[in-house]
Length: 441
Ligand SMILES: N=[N+]=NCCCCNC(=O)[C@@H]1[C@H]2[C@H](O)[C@@H](O)[C@H](O)[C@@H](CO)[C@@H]12
Image (cartoon, rainbow, N blue to C red; front, side):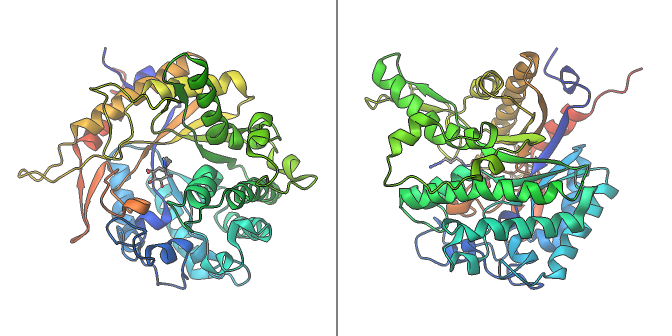
């Protein structure tokens, strides 16, 4: 029997996900002030197609149509992020009621359509005014985040099924401040590790504030995790893979789930770049969470000697290897190595060079294959006893793909940016059929 929703637990949650800066547009509307991504987009050469988030998918004005799309596909959950620059536009201080009103309407619109709202409080759009004061390198920003989180949760309350504090601390710290591909585009390891620590602190501070509201919502965090595989069994490759796993995964998992930084990586980094960890920080960061969101895209194939993947390896349009087995391996490893809360796959999906065909459809067969294979891997993990409770497809819409602008399409719904026309892709039609469980006779 082909893979069916019925192979999964009956209460397994199926959803889709987006993020504020990537879809909303309306960058200068209703009181929103610039984020670090507005600034980053304005710096020549930072975005491959020279684009920005001023319009994006115009979701700020088309949100009702987009929620109808989610409902039409039979998805029961929607993960989206709140733009801090709409809520407290200068980062601290005055609250912008119009910003809260937008998300209030959005949450009610989801509930009216029988779709569970799942909120990410921070998906990279830091108010620029805070960056002007050091951004996440400045410990004060962690406290500003907790204030912002409390304002959002006080308004949206437990209409929201889950609140994730952060999306992908690795991207916010390392990709953005050591590698430099994302805003603010620094290349400074000490800065990156200070950012990572302040995100861990901010997560803890916000958790305490949200817990105090006695919400029924689940509270957690979303980490992008990339399982590292040594190219060969030799010592150099295995050591390199352990280092990659430590820097990419355990540096973020361990503070949150174990209340400590991994000792091997702490030693590897060395005193000059290590963060200033104050007493109590890691106790705050490792408070119990109700769920861990895992964003999985691919594995890391690690070779100390420059060995590459074999001919015939499949890649997505991002150049990421298609490796569904890595999802199962990752989840089984998490289950083995950590005391886990409920797990959700909060992002999984693929970019392909989609076009609208003569027949007006988008025949994205590769994406359907990608999703089918990763659903199967998720099921393998469930059957291995992993407490996996749901899966969110990245992404509902083609959208602003950060440093790649609009040149990469991750949506299960195609967006024609010239007209804002949405076209449901074949992969979404497949997903709709996958979710349509025949009612028992
Ligand atoms: N060097 N290098 N890097 C590899 C970086 C992998 C981590 N990137 C992600 O996980 C991002 C996540 C994000 O939440 C979403 O906003 C993005 O649109 C998707 C697609 O890109 C994924």
